[in-house]
Length: 73
Image (cartoon, rainbow, N blue to C red):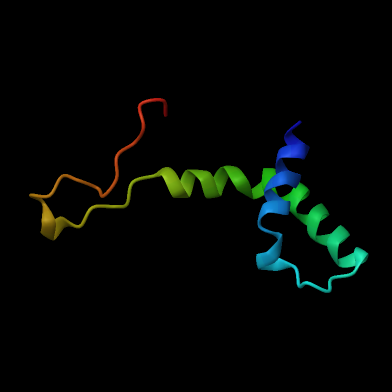
C-alpha cells in the first residue's frame, strides 16, 4: 500500500521530471527511483518542512513564526 502511494505521487509529478517522449527505460528508472528514495529521504524532508523557522533575535516582539500547526500534528 505504501509503495502504491509513492507510485501515485510519482505519477502526479511526472511531467515535471520526465520528458514527453521518455522511453520505457527512462520511466522505469524514474518510478524505481521514486519508490526507493521516498522512504529514505522523505522523513528528513518532512521534518525540515514542518519545523518552524529559527527566529531572528532582532525581532523579539514578533512571536508568530509565519504559520500555524494543525491540531492533529
